Amino acid sequence: MCGIVGYSGAQDAAPILLEGLKKLEYRGYDSAGIAVLNGNSITVSKVTGRIANLCEKTADGKNCPGTVGIGHTRWATHGAPTDTNAHPHLSNDGKFAVVHNGIVENYMSLREELIEKGYRFESQTDTEVIVHLIEMYYVGDLKKAVIKTSARLQGSYALGVVCTEEPQNVYVVRESSPLILGVGVGENYFASDVTALVSYTRNAIYLEDGEFAKITPDSITVFDPAGQPIQKKISRITWDIQSAEKGGYEHFMLKEIVEQPRAIKATIAPRIKDSEIVLDETELTADYLRSIHKIVITACGSAYYAGCAGKYAIEHLCHIPVQVELASELRYSNPLIDEHTLLIVLSQSGETADTIAAMKECKKRGAKTLAIVNVVGSTIAKTADETLYTWAGPEIAVATTKGYTTQLAVLYLFALYAAKKMNRLDDETYGKLLETLITLPKRIQETLDMNSAIPNLAKKYHTTGSMFFIGRNTDYAIALEGALKMKEISYIHAESYAAGELKHGTIALIDEHQPVIALCCNDSVMEKTMSNIVEVKARGAEVLAVTFKENQKIVSLADDVIFIPKVETIFSAAVEIIPLQLLAYYVAKENGCDIDKPKNLAKSVTVE
Ligand code: AGP
Image (cartoon, rainbow, N blue to C red; front, side):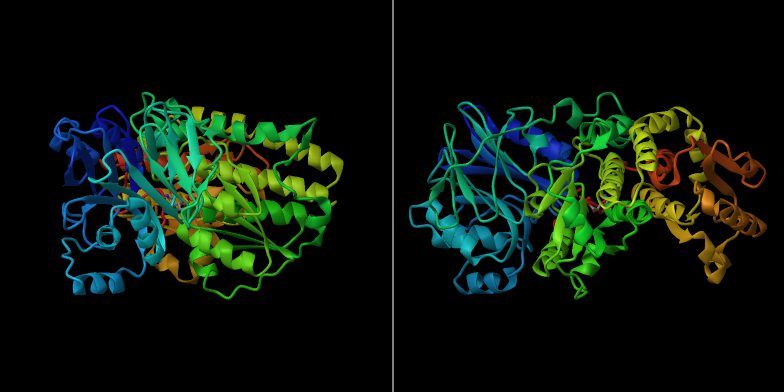
């Protein structure tokens, strides 16, 4: 939920920290700060609001001289977004500064203990206990103080620590929060994710939970929780700098919408060899797949909605029951899961706290776990038994677009692959469906090309205070995601409803002030949804329908129509969502919203 960075080298640290924070700003953006070591003092600069304010306050870092430092961009959990609650936090003696991403669950009791011992607290944050613990445990050796402090903390934390007594060193610790070390020449770095590192180095070390490291200009030493040095592999970062930048687009979200054909191709193409789906990154054998009794999909937010759409494809092709569960519910539901359950975990970031907890709970009960994740080396990828990466590249906009559609792409691949292995599909149907899957990027490109009218539709619909998204079956799964997109970036209330359910109460809300977005891309229920369009029209609603271009019948029913190319129903969600992403984007733009960083949200939800 927050982003942290650090640097130890020969250059001025502050500009490097600020650049890194700009890249991490999507993780949290209510306040920010840096601490730079300069001889035997620490200069701390903190502001409420965006990194731009911090750049202004520090004159782009010029006011904070020094070559070693740490930085933080915050999504408030404990304490309001104020200058005082912003990180870094300083010890009472001014010798230590700490940045923290995560939550210290036992901070209340630690705070009481520290207050009793005479430590003075400035902020309402959970983090401040960490810096006072370090001060308390420091007896001339920062490494020992870090070990002792970590042993007292419960919860999740990625930490960066500096100390005036060791002016070249930065210590970092990882426990259930992401942290990556960047290996340079004569300078080294750390950050919450690789986007903050790629401008400086492509060599990275991924820490495991419990590990910590000492970073100096010339070395990185990684330790196990007991403090023993360990050897770590240096991995190559493959994401390029451009993919983490806007590249001429006004917003990351628009850039990422437009990137979807490429992202889906990158996700699907390498897994097809000689007209067969090959998932050799996993050990999902025919014997194993035939042994399972059900599949449970778990995730949060849009990833959960991708699961809702994926369920149709898997059930239809594999003839196996699929349950889709919100991770925040599943983790506390005492789930009926055993070794005959395959748990599919969906997450763009791979760091979502509820999803990680649900996965661990199901693993404990014997389920095999298959993660579908975008971020290489993330917690979910590392914890799962099997991982299939979505090759979407970095997704910066808080509202997911290519992250969601590439999750669909992997679910479709899995559905076809498993159906074949389980002998639930004849060769001819398999071949035809595979062909459809391969052409999905093209269909998405056509959808993008044929929808130049959406900015004008946004001008018509942007003033409404509320709207409904309706559909049945696969169309309902898309209604869920379409409404979420609209809500999170335009702040317009949007409700998704199974079209057949309207008459059971909700239709009472329908009038001329409630535009209805009707999704009609599933042949098996299209006529039914069209009847629902007639019903809401009769109550005064304006209707904007999304349908295949072949369905001209709808033109006389709806007020406005967005056409998309015809796609096999089980895979249609990946195409159908495109106009809804664009509609949400242009409505939010009409309303002057901060599209890439919507209020109250953060990209990576690492708290419960
Ligand atoms: C979607 O636009 C949201 N940003 C949010 O619902 C997101 O999908 C959810 O928090 C799950 O994130 P994850 O995929 O990184 O686990």
